[in-house]
Amino acid sequence: MMDWFKDLPLVFETPHWLWLLVIAPVLLVLRGQSGRTSSVLYPSAGLVLGVSRKVHRRWGGVPGLLHLIKILSLCLLVVALARPKWRKGSVTESERSGVDIVLGLDLSGSMWAHDFEVRNKPTDRLSVVKKVIEEFIRERPDDRIGIVAFSGAPYLVSPLTLNHDWVLENLDRLRIGSIPEQGTAIGSAIGMAVNRLNKQKSESRLIVLLTDGANNAGQIEPVQAAEAAASFKIKIYTIGAGQEGVVPFPLINRDGTPRRDARGNMLMGRSDSDIDLETLQKVAELTGGKSYHAEDATALNKVYEDIDKLEKTEKKLKIRHNYKEVFAFPLIFGLGLFLLEQTLSGTRFRRLP
Image (cartoon, rainbow, N blue to C red; front, side, top):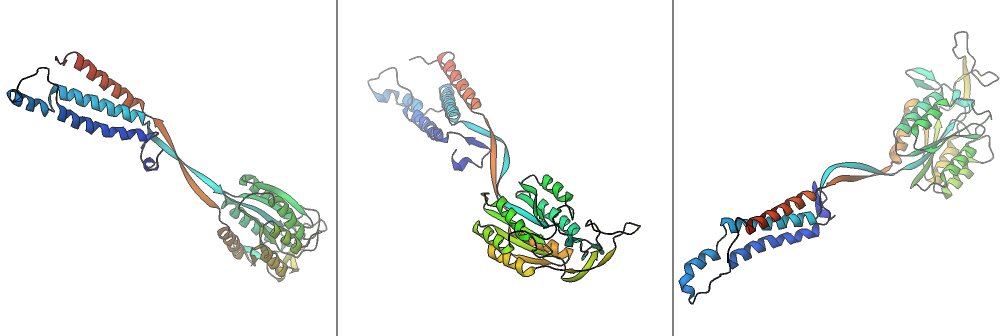
């Protein structure tokens, strides 16, 4: 279809046939100029001057009306040849150029620290982080998202997928101590995330890594893993969660669970918070990402909001129209008028020579 018809409710599949419509006014002009052919010859044109004048300029009357019907039928047949289509409706399609994101989440024992607050109540780091990540996932419906959790070893919680309900369901299941290996294997977690992203062909691939400690487990150093990510053009955003120094921390049983009193309340003590912000910053810089330090729930929310703004998904809207073929209407009416003209000119309004 030609571009200049695309915004009209009525469009033509083969609009070049419409140029034939210029013949209609030409036929009308020729009809007026030529008049009827005389059936009787006269020796002098002056004898029939008055008669010839009437015939020469005659537009009205039944013969003129029949001529108009014939031209109208011709125009309708030309319109039918142009294949008219009527727009029934339209569908907006989104062409997505999404971002592939792997969320790295620390599940080491230090995430029990209660230095975050929710409604003025001390809350452990992991509970707050999970709520913020959940909102982050919901705000990015067009991106494929996966999760790698880690403590002393990395664990694939969810592969990259657009099924965010599945991702959120697996996120909700995460608990401190669900990975038996002790420690914080930041480098290994980055390595697993890179392996999940390096074969993807999306325009933007990134890792959002949150930890509250320093790398003390695994066989890969964080900087080495970051260099590998940079070689695949994978960007890493790092988040150091929690306050530095001494923070409220529950007393821990031998099995890694927090101690509780008879009422079920956690027995709290104090513990040092060991966040390696320098290494996290270096990891981010090596890959072209950004490093953050979130000391409370509000700051953590702002961090994920900032990452969301920095890595926006490109959307292209494509409008697809639905059309119904209507060429049968001008075709039927055109043929009907042509048959009517032929019938009338050959019967009731037949002209004798």
